[in-house]
Amino acid sequence: MNRFQTHEVLNQAQPFADVNLFRCDPALVEALGREGASWAAEGLDALGAQLGRADVLDLARQANANGPRLVSHDRSGTRVDEVEFHPAWHRLMAMLVQAGAHSAPWREPRPGAQVARAAQYLLFGQVENGVQCPVTMTFAAVPALRRAPAWAAEWLPKLLSNEYDPRSLPVAHKRGALVGMGMTEKQGGSDVRANTTRAAPLAPGEAAARFGAHGEGAWAIVGHKWFFSVPQSDAHLILAQAEEGLSCFFVPRFLPDGSRNAIRVQRLKDKLGNRSNASSEVEFEDAVGWMVGAPGRGIPTILEMGGYTRLDCVLGSAGIMRAALCHALHHARGRSAFGRRLSEQPLMQNVLADLALESEAATAFALRLARCFDEAADPRQALLGRILTPAGKYWICKRGPAFGAEAMEVMGGNGYVEDGPLARLYREFPVNSIWEGSGNVMCLDLLRALGKSLPEARAALAAELMPAAALDPRFGAYATGLLDELPALAADEGGARRLAERLVLAVQGALLLRHAPGYVSGAFVASRIAASPGGAFGSLPAPCDCAAILARALAA
Image 1 (cartoon, rainbow, N blue to C red):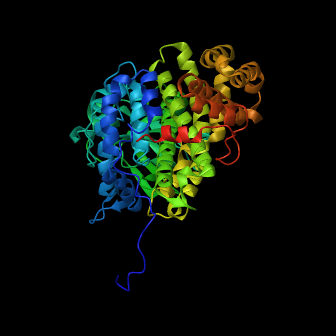
Image 2 (cartoon, one colour; image 1 turned 90 degrees about the vertical axis):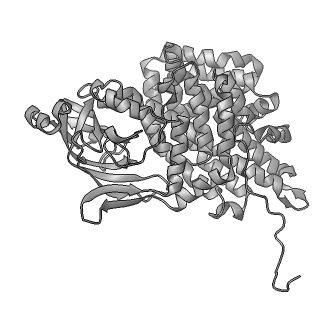
């Protein structure tokens, strides 16, 4: 042995990689079929194999280690407001767009299309959450733009295209396009009614002279956005004050005459996580936009989009949970301490099984919620989706940071350093709680939805919960109590967080009791329904079959 060779590297788990992310997840495979999208299994199996490759998983590290860079001017001094990205970002974006994560249910509508896309999105969430932001906003923008026929004919084919085209060009010259959003301002944040950005109609003669037929309905916009997502998008939907009130406007990056719109990127945000993605501050110096929806009805227009973006927050958090669980469990199976594999030690089994329950429940809830969007023509399903979307975004996203911290702790110091993925995943969790409405905003939205249709909402929840009531008396009492107390709970703003939590736990419990193995549903009810889910992970009560839960959590 060379005397300068200080040691051999032993007892280090290999990275979690080169695995089929779909096939190793029985809960996702089962939920896909249960919620009406079994036809998509073959494509998702192929996608799971692609995304689980070591080289693809490493793209996330590269994209975050080499974040976007603002280029305000070109070398000749011309203002360009460009954002440069690492090649890893573009490779990941191309994968999402080629898979149709931004458009498939709109381009090829069929029963189960939203569920299939949700499963796909959840798989992508296990790789890199930053690239999902522009995909989500484009996905959510399509229904709104379909109500703007003057723009739909030119833009929709590009938005529905499966070609990722990052070139900075007018949309007429591009093979595919993306849309971002800009809502919040410095003085208002979530209170968008406080927005001061203003819009005034261009004089018809001036608009026609500049843009020809496209000039009809053009507005000049002056103001700012404190958070302007993905500034390199081909267009944004923003809110601005018109004479009739707050309205929604479509603001393209390049105008119909080929010139750049006057959207000035002031700086990129220096964020805790989501670092591969560009978020920015911008000012509008007589930028030109076109109204989408009715004058003064900007908030209802945006709220429809908000339903889809909030669904994706639930899916994104569920995906990151699944990734953190897989990395932690794989590590525990490959490392020994005190004479045994970590995964064989009772206390570690309890921690990992508790995380596995949380992840499976989040997956089941997320795909059930997606089915509400698939079946939105049914008033009961539409109402259930209206209730469960803000509740789910609150609870599942809120569980993420604690989940990530516990998964990191399973890996010890190896989890805390940037060489592995856990630190990045941990930083990624909070954005889904904050983006598209923080926890309190979601809970207030839930109260508004219940206040508008409480009897119908109670009936929809009863239809979802009561088929499972007879399967476990503890759950039956929990569900009955929730339904009985719903009128009082819906009137108590101070208790809205507790209501959202109870609703999500009830739906998760019903899904698991009806469809998961008994060792999963029994442990979930014992730890979340019969007792409070608060506190640290790893306190599952006896008897729980932790070994069986873990064998299911990450199938060979």
